[in-house]
Length: 339
Image (tube, rainbow, N blue to C red; front, side, top):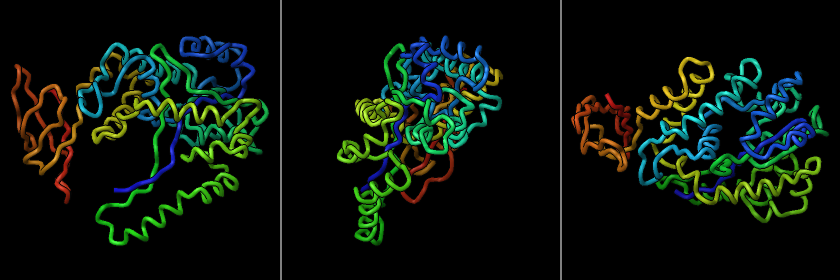
């Protein structure tokens, strides 16, 4: 498959940068004091982010020294029950619970973006393309908003960057026409038109990012959004987001959504929920459901499985469940959990 796409880098934004500067926010250690000070002043909710926590939480996890998998893509043993993961889950959930607006668990990305423009929340870690909307002409905070890098944690700074792309399957019947369309859709000319007419700034072309026109438009109240954008892409180039590219991550993403909601709503403590999350394991295999091989790196790797077949290894019983039938390419997904 050949593909091209556009990135979605994660940054931070504030509607009242003067309050941020007064608090001297630079890393996670200072965030609780800042958010508490903002809460004491009343008015806008101090913090909010969208409820896709499988996207929003991992940068906090990595910043606390945690990992999704032991060493993706080669070793996919889950690492969501480590002390670092539990600390990150507690920190992130506490911010949502104690400093978020009412109904925070229902906030989608567009609701967060609109709340920032309306000035009803003060600070958010979110995607660049949503944060820059604070500076639009109809924004109530256009003159007081600010952008920054994703804050650093004890282990460093790890903003997410994902790429949404066009793809052409190997079996496509009209490859030349398909490729012509993709080339047009990702051309410099069209991206410039999208940027000029629609304000779309999440682009992959370094030549476009370096243009004065791009830099001038992303200079927001003295904050250099273009430099923040470049620096975020450079950080992600170190490869720490590779966990998002492995086949088992989509179901893990959804489980993280559920886990954070459970912790924020205090249905379960962070340590219990993280332990539970790490025991639910998702792997990828090739072949029909009756002949699956569990991906290397799992704690208890059986060689073959069939739906509901039970294995015994080291005194621990494991049951594997085939999640659906194999597709035409001979691939299926297996969800397995320790009994």
